[in-house]
Amino acid sequence: MEHGCFQIPNLIFFFRVDFERGPKKHSLGSSQNDGFFAKWGNMTQLQLFNTMGRKLMPFVPLVEGSVGLYCCGLTVYNFAHVGNLRAYIFEDVLRRTLEYSGFQVNHVMNVTDVGHLSDDADSGEDKMLKAAVEAGKTPWEIAEFYTKAFFTDLDSLNVLMPTTVCKATDHIPDMIALIQRIEANGFTYFSGGNLYFDISKFPEYGRLALLSLDDLKAGSRIEVDKNKKNPHDFVLWFTQSKFEHQAMLWDSPWGRGYPGWHIECSAMSMKYLGEQFDIHCGGIDHIPVHHTNEIAQAEAATGKKWVNYWLHNEFLLFGTEKMSKSLGNFVTLTTLGEKGYAPLDYRFFCLGASYRSQLKLSDEGLQAAKNGRAALSEKIILLKEDAGGAEGNAKSAPAASFLASFEEHIALDLNTPQALGDLWGLLRDEKVPAADRLAAAYEMDRVFGLGLKETEREKVDLDDEVIALVEEREAARKAKNFARADEIRKILEDRGIVLEDTPQGVRWRKK
Image (cartoon, rainbow, N blue to C red; front, side, top):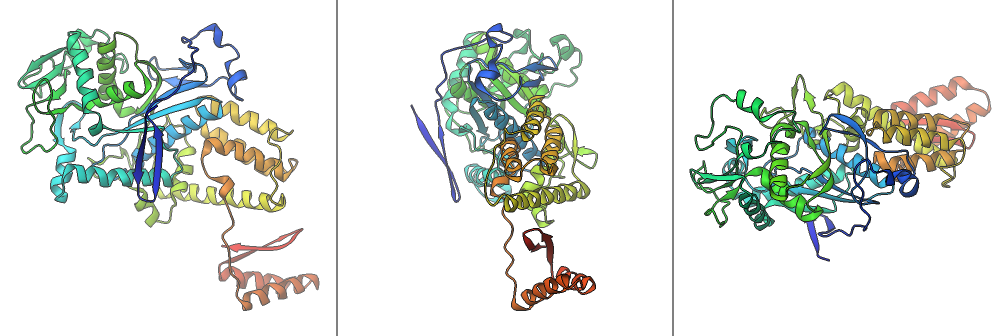
């Protein structure tokens, strides 16, 4: 078993390069899987919307009890914007749901630290080279800096670290080997110094995007690359760079050059998950070109179906447009922090909408999410105090009914808005003992990832004057001098301290 280590400032993430899978395999729709979740998990049958076919499908893994999950990572030439991060929050909820259901998840994510073009269809400018020139650094220095920043962002959002993080620059030999298999099977041609994938040799090209080869040919306009037989053919390996002074170059059977963008995901996912695996994720913008080309490459090499489930998240909108670095309208977590929003406020914001719905970024929406998370945290803190630090039984009635409803909603294509409603219903039900409400809430948070168990009241150090006011107010209340008690409450609120009268006595917290 080979192991590796990926390090960023103050954090060290260990990952396994190989992954042990059980021996028992199933095909989709197999009757052998009846009762699968009863054995492996505690949820009803998980239903996922498969982009391949555009329909909800019951999830049945290739290998009983384990899931191979591949998620397209970031191209590390700039900071991740919150539109990028929405995808990783969705994928984290998916992984957490699978693990909640009892699966062992082998989660693989690439980091694109090889320069690729700004357009999926082999056009535009080299992102990595441009960033390096502007910063006066090498592409490797740019990649290292933004890779660390990316994983720092993920950590602040409570996104679980993938089982394997694979950098493109570490896997050039794997890409070359896969290209050689594609070439040996007759799917390539060499033209103008570059090796191309010939989509006319792959009849099922475009099925993920619901495009046929005839449609693609009929819809073709100007050929961007005169070396292509078809405008939708794509480069597997460049030896004739479109840019001068290309820094990232490797030797290959076709000459010294660098890989096309799409080949890295096919090569690295197959290295760590096998030639067939369960789920591939990404944003909807990956459907028509990047993921379509990944499928063509992988299946041209192996001659068999590659991925069973394709899941894609919708755009985060800024105004009426999608958030994009190329449009210059991107917002980072740091930007949100400067406006007073914590990373988990943004996570809570994303959980309030289906991953398959467009989500509009606005101060109103973010403020509502911030207030909602603050109210949720306060409710958890009060329950902890009422329960005296004890954690009860999440499966005791009536807590179990809320948990069952939550599981039903989250199993229906990760319906986080409805699942959050179940959480609120649970926390507000006074018929459920505080300790049981806490236990059930913690179970739900295994999927939400909001860190509820670690939520603590912010400590407030009261000076002697404030303590004297609190004691005076208590005396006024006992003497039924409610006017003075209310006056003191107002004085303290003006100082940022909120008092709460409970059967256990007065509590205070920051406003």
